Length: 437
Ligand SMILES: [Zn+2]
Image 1 (cartoon, rainbow, N blue to C red):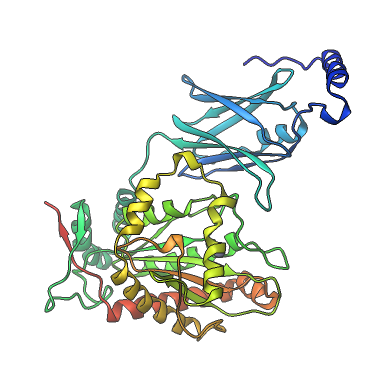
Image 2: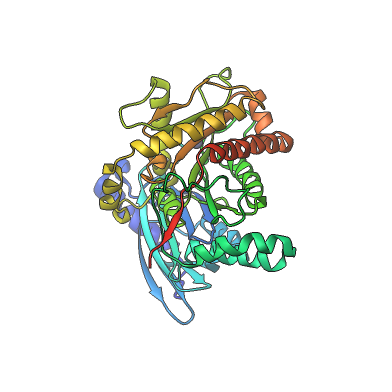
């Protein structure tokens, strides 16, 4: 890597000529780096450089050892940028180290040393509250694990260490899953599966849990500084434990750490593991401290059920802007095709699931609205998976913010969500799946 020292004398001379030509108002100065952030995850590792004006970058991928060199134009090597070096964590699945140096007077070169081959995506994001200009590098591992295979591998590992009794219970559902391609079919009317927990010959039931926000997108924040993305992840992990304790159920998390997942990717992830249910977990917020209580939302195909539901859907749908998605890489075609599919059956099932969950949540805390509301939430648009969005409480209400942080309340809440799921399955058994052979 070529790292030249900035020549201060040359810098001054250049600045002088610019002043002569353009006047003081138009002095071209480098952008100020406001913050650098690193978001490691198994899915991808994101590097964010936030600045007071737009900066441009060019990247080069190098092999042996794998690394990405990124030339950032229009900035000086400043302490804020050097902070990146210290932010690399040893457990980062993708990055082993970062080096920075001034490559020429106006170009800083960043070298990201990699643990594995990656596919980098570099893009800029226009200012959106609470951020100014962002330059983003997303490093996607070239080798992608199949989430369904990982889920099965996990389950097999547990089976090997589980007591013999549990082994018997797991043998059949696994056999069905390992067959690979499984498809939903309408069950014969006289042959419905009674309950996911009672019948040991059932297939594995997969519940996708979607902790809202993450990474660059903190979601809402409470008066005490609690972030929605943190508490919803904690609740999701507790719900995951409860689901995985059931003999033939498995939870799949759309994110299991603090990183951003675009809304359509959350839906795609749930569909890839052929989830039976999709449960997005959030915490509500308002401009004033008073509003309180939990609420549950499902998709609507004919407008929102209330103006507040519409307002909330718009707010949750703006997650992609704050979290930061690469517009060019977004697959508009797939998204549009998905939205055009009929959702009536999905909405009917979602209303039943939402009703069961709302009823249970009413037993552990206050409800904001007594019935399930509907609006056009992007994250609920899987056409074939009953999907609900749970606003667990108002993080903007100081009492509820305290409850959301409280481990015993988090446990009570996830118990209630679990009872809601089981209540739904008791009345609406999961559909049988055929092997596509
Ligand atoms: Zn949210």
